[in-house]
Image (cartoon, rainbow, N blue to C red; front, side, top):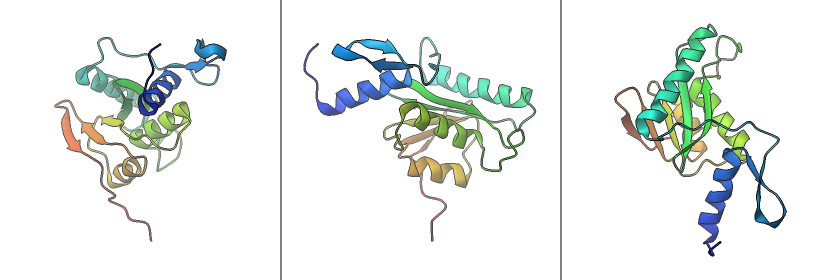
Length: 159
């Protein structure tokens, strides 16, 4: 393997971890035991990624929850996904975007999602946008028109 910069190697490791892969001795890839891999759309473009967010929305509705879904994408790969769980989880903070961010940081085992994009079925609320900002998500996209909402802003400020 050719020498790579620390940044690209870090991204490769993060991407591998998000795909359910762990590094074993000698740099070879081995399946990870901790988290199931996210099935990636093929081909993986913005429309296919948004289709996954809408699949999460349909899942939320089927489970009796609010009709919202979201996915987190890093380097063109889905690293977190979730339907809304506000009703089923009896948790007012379990919006689809919050749940997808939680899923991504759990899968990547990192608090920062620097460089990631958040795709959601509707415009994120102030709480979700603030969470995306704090997670260092670089861009938000929402709706069937793939509306680019730009980088998240800290809508809710801490005292």
